[in-house]
Structures are given as structure tokens and as C-alpha cells.
Length: 319
Image 1: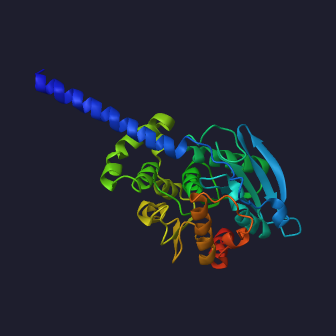
Image 2 (image 1 turned 120 degrees about the vertical axis):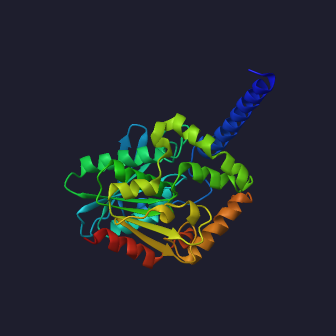
Image 3 (image 1 turned 135 degrees about the vertical axis):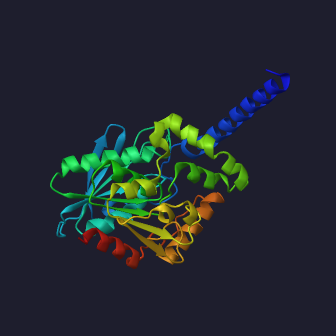
């Protein structure tokens, strides 16, 4: 081998290693952390909505079975899959909505979130593992009831992937990203140039492969279509967290897929426009170091859009 060929080979190897390490660092920043409650914020509980809550412990995963006494029970269980954050406690308002309709709701926190153990989230596909564990639990505990999946953001991705692995009646995915690689690249592009973020794509793919094997790069839209499970995919047209370009909404095309675009909404399209604005105010305050939220109206920040919630309810009960 000529000297110049040796030099080129060495340079290639060094660049490859550096790009891989950079990609690994980005992945670590995104997922190698715990997500717990912010002690300065109010999180609604079962008591706030007069729900019953039965504790669940599945190894390192923990959560609750929620129900509402005094309402006619439906022949179905909603497995609620949370987004990235402190676990399902950030969605108690939505959980209560389904309980008020008569559904039993099973909500587990994923590894590294909220009630569950784990030093970190590990990676995006770990949410799929948690969703599958919740489905298996619900199927065993309620063998005569239909199982429905509802997930938001990371939970939407997890739900769409999980419905290919386990038989469920229907799935609702809200603001769901399509690809683990593009999710991290999209986040990185806010701090790096888009070409640099794109350059890291194959190395992020490798990181996911090393963590989870081939399934670590599963795409949500492809899984949902192949599952043939009736799926309602909801996307806000102004979502900056999961852009339409990088969403399962834009890529899932099949006879089993129903799409619903919510105009003027961001990452939480099940909330009212005013609630999304209030939540943005809250997040901005946290970013700016504010710690006193005693005067903040948390109910206003979680006010649901009745039209969007009704569309979900109608989808679940339709034949």
C-alpha cells in the first residue's frame, strides 16, 4: 500500500471515530438522563379527578390502573403511553378524560421516568419496550376486554411501533416522531447546522443499533401500516418539537391509517390554543430560572380542546 493510501485510510478512520463519538454524545445528551417531576410544579393526581388508582409494579416499571367509579364501564382498556418527561403524571387530565368515558386506563412510566427505576432513558426504542410491557399486563389483567393504545410524542412513536408487536384493537398517536435518528437530528439541528446534523445520521443509526439491535431504528409509520391496526394519527400543523416533515403523520399511508391535522396547534394539539400558550409561558419561565409558580394557573395550562378529544373518543368507539 502506498504512503498516500495509508494516510487516507488513517484519516478516514480518525474522522469516522470522531463522528461516531460526536453522535454518541448527542444521543447521550438526549437519553442518558432521568426524567423526574420538577419539584416547583404542580402535577394533577387521581384525587383531583376523583379517580381510583391501583398501583402496578412490573420489575423496574411502575404505574397505576385508573378508573372512575359511578360511570358506565366500557368494554375496553386504554393503555396510555407518555411522552418524554416525568412519566404519565404529566397526562392526568387526559387519563381522566378516558376514565370519565368509562375506560379503564393502564399507565406505566417508562424506564428512567417518574415512578420507574433506571438511571436513564437508555434510548428511544426503550419506550416501545415499556409500551409492550403495559399491553402484556393489560391483556393478562383484563383478558376479556379490548386493548387500545394512546400515546403522545415519544409515547406516540412507542404506540405505533408496539401495535405491530402486539395485537391491539386500535391506536391513537399524537405528535408522534417517525424515526429515532431523525428525532435526534432534528433536535441537534437547533444547535448545529442542518448539514452537520444530517452528516451524523448514519452514526446515530449505529448508536441505536448497538443499543437495541436492528429494532433500535424502527420507524413508527412503517410499523403502523404493516400492523394493519386501525390508527388515528394526530398532528398540530405548527408543531416545532416534532415537525410535520419528521412526523409519523407525514409518512404513514395505508388503508388502516386516519390522519387528523389540527390547525394552529403545536406539540400538544389535544389542548386549547390558550392552554398551549400558557404551557409555552411556563416552559419559558423554567428556562429563565423561575422557581416560584404559586400563582401559576396549571388548570389553564392543561385545558383540553373538546373537539380534538371528542375525535379521539369517537375513533375508539367506532366499529
